[in-house]
Image 1 (cartoon, rainbow, N blue to C red):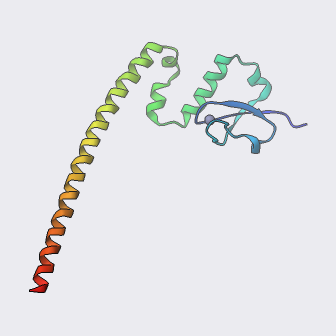
Image 2 (cartoon, protein in one colour; image 1 turned 135 degrees about the vertical axis):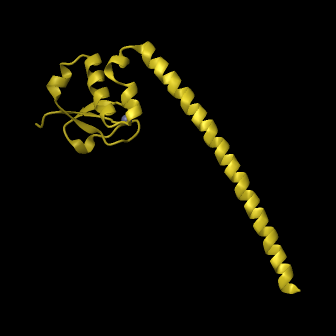
Image 3 (spheres, rainbow, N blue to C red; image 1 turned 90 degrees about the horizontal axis):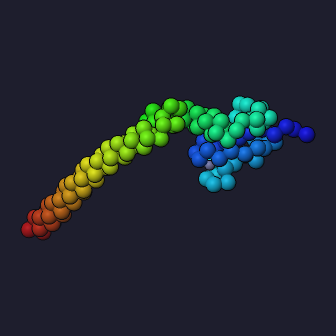
Length: 131
Ligand SMILES: [Zn+2]
């Protein structure tokens, strides 16, 4: 019988054991699970915290640099620093989002104004044609 292998979900961190990789799909978000380059028995010998640490390392390796920066291992075990950094990041993103929304509504106004002007011009041209 083929040995079990460890697979993890790069989206949500779920992990499970399968014999065949074709069965390895996340039940939550249906992402294809990624095989862990570690023997099943070695993984089983880790405690839950060590497993979390290992998988978090794997997931953040391919994550954008912001997430990598926030999730560096010493911060992960310093909850206050992590909360502080996330709060600051959240405030920054919220401000950026407000500015973007402002820009979008300003652009909408501009576009509608342009469309209205075009309509007026079209009407004027129609009138000229019929003169
Ligand atoms: Zn998942």
